[in-house]
Structures are given as C-alpha cells and as structure tokens.
Image (tube, rainbow, N blue to C red):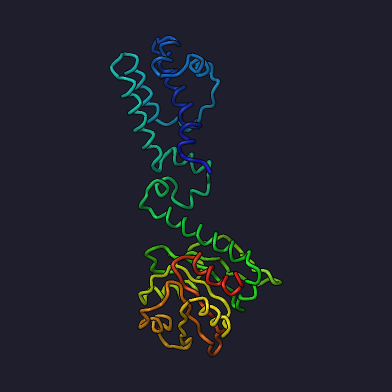
Length: 302
C-alpha cells in the first residue's frame, strides 16, 4: 500500500527542490541563501548541487514544473515572492498533478492495482463510492473466513454450490452485489472459495437478494445452503422467520412470497422445496454478510 503523499515526498519533492536550488544558484544566490530561501539545510543544498539525489525524468521534463521553478526562483531571488506564496504556488501545482495527471500516473506505477479503480479520482473523492464498495468486499471476506473456518459448513453446501453476497446500499442490479466468483463448493469435505469477492459475479443469489429488496425488505446480504426440513426448523428454532416460496412461480417468486410479510425478523429465511429440474434450496437474508453467516452457524452448533 502506497499513499500518493509518499509519491509526492519520494518522487516529486527531491526533483522539484533540486531544480529550484539549481535555479537559485544560477541566479547568484549563495548556498546559505538558497538554504534560507527553501527552508532546508545547507548540506541538503550541497547534495542537490552535486547531484546526490535521484531525480525523476517525468518531473524534470514537465513544462508546468519548469515554469513554476522559474517563477518561484525569480520571485524568491528578487524578494517579490514570499516563502509562503512560493509554498502555495507549489501546493497548487501538486494538487493539479495529483488529479489524474503526472503524480497520479506515478502513483499507479507504484501501485498498479489503482488502475482498476480510476486511481486518484475515486480514492480521494468521498462521493465516488470506492470506499463503500471496498467496505462491502471486506465485509464479505470477514464473513467468509468465519464461515469456512466453521466445522461442518461443507455439509450445508448444495449441489449447485453456495454463494455469500452483500450489496451496496442502493443496489439495483447484480453489478451492485459482491460475491464469490464461481461459488463455494464442497471439495472432499472442505468448503473451497475459488477467488476474492468481486462485484457482478453472482447471478443467482444476488438476484434473490435483489428480489427481496424489491419486496421492501431492508436486507443487503444473502447466502444459499441446502434445503432440508431440519435445516429450516433449526433456523426457526434459533429465532429466524422462514418463508416458503414456489420455485415454479411464473413471475418473481421471492417478491411474491415476501410482499405481504410485514413481521419478518431482520435476518430471515426463504426456501423452496424444489421443482422440475430445480434443486431445493434455503436462503438466509439479512442486513449484512456477518448477520447471515451468524444465522448459518447456528446450524453448526456455534
């Protein structure tokens, strides 16, 4: 993990300061005067003068940086620009270069996975949704860890596999729902997760969750496990309401089954007992991934 501020400190500032120190020396300032103007030590100025710092070519060749160095150098040399103004001018340029520009590219170079998230723009914009989506994925990861560490969970996985999903607050489509790519399968008695949670990878369980939300239920997570009367009875005994739906219903069976239920617990169960070519399945739905996993674990004696 590398912050863009580290890129500024490690990649931009040494080059910018060395360029500015060089400019001021060319204007006739002594090493002591350059140190005073830049607020750094004379030994640092000496390092800049002797080329003892690594300089980024991208910064050296950027015309905006060169223009700023010339303006600030002239202003500091003549006294027309205060150190505070020089700092403000430099800060303004840094902010510009961070916003999808030179420093953003250097940041992505240092941390390539940022390219998948539109880099700086989404990281620094609180309204971009990136923080929320990463929190959802983190919630699914934590719940999956609890689930797969639980003894006996593999025995609850249906033939079609299980999936654990959680949605964004205003989810409308499966692309707004994070889940396990490829589903969770029982491999020789162990629950196996093929990959890290992603958005848009669960068509089936995500659709069940979205249908429940369409029915007015305030739920954001769901998991499917095998159907068995004892499974449903165990969940009901633990205090979770259960609703049966018709898997062969022509429209939206989940929404229809939940439409008239106003008294459901915050975490509840929907199940169907099968149909032509349809495996019977139990779904647990709740406010978040942790809540639905907690419900499933009651079946395992936890």
